[in-house]
Length: 291
Image 1 (spheres, helix red, strand yellow):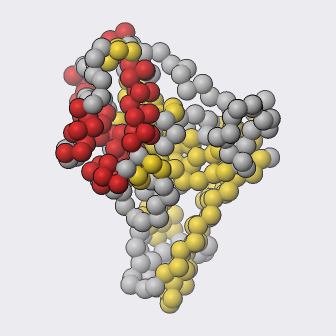
Image 2 (image 1 turned 60 degrees about the vertical axis):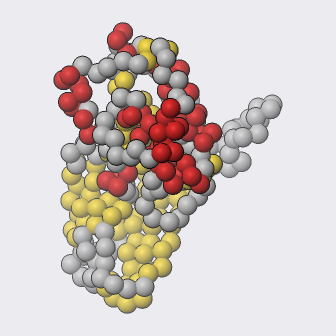
Image 3 (image 1 turned 120 degrees about the vertical axis):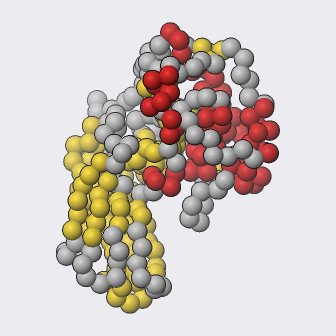
């Protein structure tokens, strides 16, 4: 039986004076390749005199360009969606014969199309040291991806990090800790060094409390939770884009709702935009409720 849930995402910026709010880009609508059925979706902005245009970027993500003709003391953005939480088997795919074992090469046409997702941007000493420890001997591709995903999980202790931007791979490996977006960047760079196309994903993560207790399983959520999250997708011929979550060490499942998938984390930010100089108070909430 399909379970319906309502997700609410609230973001508020309150300024110490009326300010000019420059155009904003919002990446807060589930991506076209989201595997769950989105029954309803609403994006609400508190300022009545705003102009909003929906479009798709060059990576096919939905984004809203918003313009604000008048100054304001605050900017409040609300997202409400109802989603059918249908159970997804993350291994429900087939691989092309040439990609069943790692290492393998993309054909030239495919490689050209995947070029932005193969670009290596980091070559630090700690990253290269970690890369040298990866077993690149002939092996099943899926087993290899699972092992690499779990290696990042073991290398990086998860922490909630409120600072903006993303840590470099060197900083993450030096600290041995980072947020979900830091682990995601590390995994994309490892995959690209190994010749596999990967992209950064920002989205919602829904975690529901188990209705029945399972003996010996103490790791599940104690209550229904939702949050903004980051993970990655790797392109494997035959299967297409496969989601890997290095924060959990697992493949992406029904709890992962992608909002934006891009070659780098900076072009996948949920909200981007500026105002004239001012003091600002930031408030954020993300909740989920079973229907």
